[in-house]
Length: 211
Image (cartoon, rainbow, N blue to C red; front, side, top):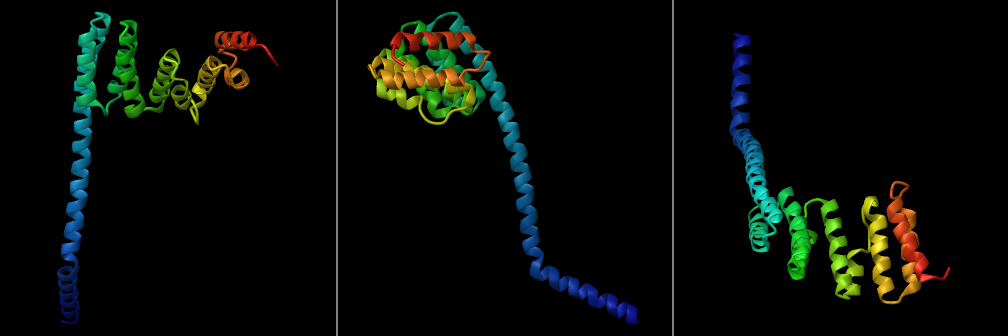
């Protein structure tokens, strides 16, 4: 009987504990299950988005190959509106910018590069977009805007390119001392494998003269 009484007390204690805490545990379980379901739902949605973006990216490439500027712009707009969070969108922006520039649509090219600067999900694409946009601003004599794009911290792979572009923008303003400093930094940042880039920068540096 003592054993049965002890067991009964344990059962009653458990009932009291569940009455006090059961709702909390139930809600925790529900939240966990919802989080798991949400995670799987999010992953499925991402896969679906990536698949649809891949199909649209093929259309972008066909438009680029066909050199049809209007089709290129429509496809790029669709990509950025519908799948702006995917890797395909940043790829589309850079490819479209190049195609539009070659079609003499500089404004369209700038718009695509600016989109990539603002929305690219990967730093490498963002850095490349800034570099190319700074080049277009150099052509337009918008020197300060261009310098702003290629200043500040950047991944080591782009450090030499950024310094070189700063040198171009500064040299165009006849700020030769600052341009020389930028070109010298570019030479420091370019590695041994960048022999052709180093030659070009050295040529620019020699053309400036001075120390």
